Length: 111
Length: 122
Image (tube, rainbow over all chains, first blue to last red; front, side, top):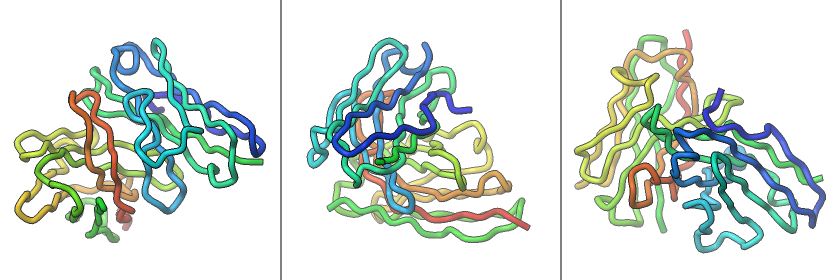
């Protein structure tokens, strides 16, 4: 069981908007630690999409956006494209475990 | 261009040892923490270990404490992970990742390697 909870899968048609939730607790997201999001196509290196809750690295399209509130965070993807089909992970820090933690991952399917 | 290249993976028996290496290029290596993150077959990402920029501080997930040792050589731009007393549940692809961020608790992984596969099996 991951410390951060994500839905196992989400799906959407091309052009649609989807959101991926990441639910934590008062020892991680709720403790005001930043949340970061990664895209991980199978067999390749993971890539950071959002860091520090809402910031996008250069080169990441503005179709990807992050938000955080209380003990939860979300990744929104608008204008879905076939190339967005991938696994997505949230990540934060946990003060009880004294280490960095990932969500269980969400598989995005573009219909 | 930032590059991280892992090596050293392979098949090892339970109780055995293996040493992974990560060769970095394209950035000032001594600036940044470096971590190992693993992914077991069919599972999600799991943080394993982190070493700070000068090698003076190390961090481990509980399941590998006392068995794994992370180290770095800033003159060679390399990070190593010595894995001893390996267990079947250590089977995974191990990724090397460059750390970013200011506050330790807000660190994230801004560049990753493609990973090296470690299989622990008899």
